[in-house]
Image (cartoon, rainbow, N blue to C red; front, side, top):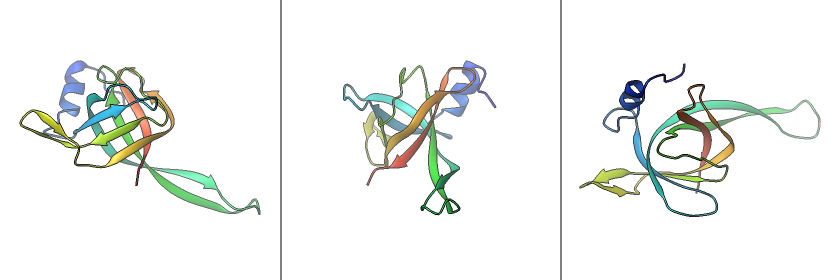
Length: 120
């Protein structure tokens, strides 16, 4: 279901409710962009394994949503550092995630829908 209005986005990406403070860094580097992320949407993507043609495995990836007005361009291999806020400053005390696959915008064009994996 698309997030259709600015009021809907503000409510959904409220860091006191569903969203988590984060910073996004592009794979080529550059400035870390402060953003609010909705994280932990499980996805199951079937992945063929083995050489016998019949073996299948299901691997679960994590999903995240990022507001496009906070991060205008999300790229494959970009990184999201989750964290918290302390006295108005970002503290990188959460998971470090890498964007895998091709980032897509939702139907409204206002929200990035990305698949991520945890970086060890």
